[in-house]
Amino acid sequence: MRIAIIGAYGLVGSAISARLVADGHAVVGVGRDVVAARRRFPALEWQRADLATASVADWTAVLAGVEAVVNCAGALQDSPRDDLRAVHVDGVRRLVEACAAVGVRRFVHISAAGVAAGRGTAFNTTKLEAEALLAEGPLDWIILRPGLVFGPAAYGGTALLRGLAGFPGVTPVVFGDSLIQVIGTEDLADAVVRCLAPEAPTRVSLDLVHAEALTLVDLVGRLRGWLGLPPAPTLRLPPVLARLTAAASDGLAFLGWRSPMRTASLEQLRIGVRGRSEDADRLGLTPRSFDAVLAAAPSGVQERWFARAYFAKPAILICLFGFWLVSGLIGLTVGFPAAVAELTAAGMSAGLAAGAVIGGSLVDIALALLLAWRPTAARALQGMLLVTAGYLIGATLVRPDLWLDPLGPLVKSIPAAFLALAALATLDER
Image (cartoon, rainbow, N blue to C red):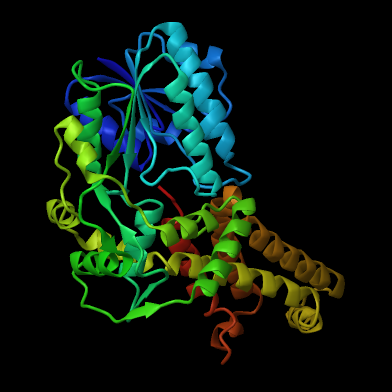
């Protein structure tokens, strides 16, 4: 069967795509950024389309020859990069119209456990509208509502949980008594395969969760054990602190950063993730427990590295931003006379020395601001490495004695460069 997977390189979409390819299906992977996806998943035929903006005509071209569609695309919260209504409602409407136009009948839609009337988040409201839209449409649809999806890949909420599990010394949690039901990526992919079978039920909404409901404290504790780390005391954070963190994360979204610690995530955490475990019986599926999911994918050193580096990464980025910004501001203000004096003492003219200090300070500030803007962060880190190298080479030629200065102005630049290297190595989000 020729199947189109919308959002095929995400956590859910990639697991489903891999299973369908393994089963011998021809899979068309669809996403808004497919350059890297083509390298990561060469077995798929890739088509570029953005669910939020693609027209019916665009989808008609993408779906040529397709026999079934699996929609895994979604967004967590409105931001400059994501529009929930455009993705969850308007985009799904156009996709359904295109399916009907080209004769695609089978449509598997990945929603979320707990989507119900009365929950006021925009995520819930738009997800519910998409489900209603499908119910009114002409397709043979199946809506799957997975619980917390956990698998070998770490992204979004499950990445955050790994970071909490790997936190040094303590396990920080908020809403630690919230109940969460889990589904493994392999079980979710298996469910999709069963939905695509000719005898599968249609026009039904099914929750996909294991029956066991874990508290957040218990879930993170089991993750910590899976990582091979010793037990740590639980630090229950006050909700007000979590809300402040979520508000800051919401603000960072305007700079292009997509943190899982945003307001929508916090609200979902407060509500919990619950579903009807008996729904899986409709597909002849028995979801595995969280312990079984973990046991099937033993952790290695890469999981421990990721968990321990999870919160170190934003700390490194904040440190670098502050270092370069403050360095530039000091060079333009209180440090300006001393810096000019150092250069003139080495034989440089006063005018040239002043220009060098001003130019260097402006470069420092520019690199800090470029680092703050997510689309240019990688270039900023590369620039920091180049500027540091140039600074060290130039200082060695002009003032080699500074290598022996007790305050270490040159020596201290080397750790800062390696900090930029560490940030560059961990910058990818998925």
